[in-house]
Image (cartoon, rainbow over all chains, first blue to last red):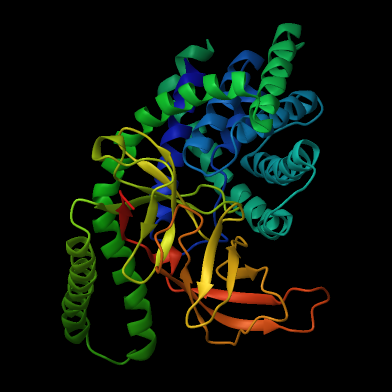
Length: 165
Length: 268
C-alpha cells in the first residue's frame, strides 16, 4: 500500500518536473526526483516493494525522456541492488544522511549509464555531457531529497501511520 | 532482516532483460514497447492537465524575474509605479504571443493540411538527452520521424508517438544528425548534436569552401527534413584540426529552451 502511494507521488513529481522544466531555463538544475523514492523504499520498506518502485520509476523516467529503451530501468535496478547491499551497513538517521545517500546514488547512476553504453555499444557517445551534469545533478538531487524525505515523513505521520502497527 | 533470495533473482532477471532491450534484441524490444506505450498513454492526460496551469505559472515566473530586474534598476521608484509596471508587463507578453502565433499561422497557411501546430508541454527529465514533449499525438495524425519546425528553423524529429502526446528529439541531442547544405555554396555536411546549445558540422573537407557566417539549410537527403529549411549559422571554424575535415561550430536558429509552439510537418 505504502509503496504504491510512493510510486504515485514519484510519478506525479516526475511529471511536474518535466512540465515545469519546459519553460524554466534550468539546465543544470534538473534533479532526479525518482532516486529518493527508490532509496527510501529500499531502506524503509520491504525488498519486494523497493524492487517494484525501482522498475516503476525507471519506466516513468523513460516515458518522459529520450533515454534509450530500458536503460533507466537497468540503472535503477543496479541502484536498488547496491542500496540493498548497504541497507544493513548504512544508517539513515536524518534527512541529511538520506540526502547524502541520494547524492551518491545519482553519481552512481551516471557511472552505471556510461558503463552500460560502453559495454553494450562499445562507445559512450555523450560521456562529456554526462560527466558535465553529474555533479550539479547529484548536488541538486541531494538538496531536493531533503524535502522529499520530510514530505514522506509528514505523510507517514499524518496518514500512513496505521500501517506501521 | 535478511533479503529474500527471490527478490535478488527477480532483480537479476529484470536486469538481464533490460540489458537485452537496451541492445535492441527484437523479442524483448517489441514487448517492452507495448508496455511503454501503455504507460505513456496513462501519463499523457496528466501531462496535458498540468500544461494548463503552466501558462499561469509561466506568467508568474516571468513576472517574478522581471520584478527582480526592475527592483535592481529602479530601487527608488514608488510603490504605485511598481504596480503600473506590473500591469504593463502583461502587454509585451501578449504582444510576443500574438507575434509568435501570427508567424506560426503564416507558416501553417503555406502548408495547409500538411502541418499541425503543437504546444510544448514538457521537457526531458534527464539533461543527458534533449527532447521535448508536445501536446499532439496519434489522434492528430502524428507519426514517428515527422519533422518538427518553427518559423525560425528546424527543431527536431518525432521519435515516439502516444495517443495524447509525442516526444520530439531536438537536433542538439547527441543521437541527432541532420543532412545540410551550406547556402550559396556547393558544400554538404552533417550537423550532429552535442548535448549543448552549439552543434557540430561534420564531414566538411579542407578543400570545401566554408566561411564563418555561412547559413545552413537542410538538404532533404536524409528523408526526414524537407529541403531548404533553415538550420543554423556557422560561428567558428577550426582549420588547424588534424585530419581531412574541419572542426565547425554551428549555432541553431532556435533557442530550444524557449520553445512554446512548434509545427509538425505531416507530409513531405
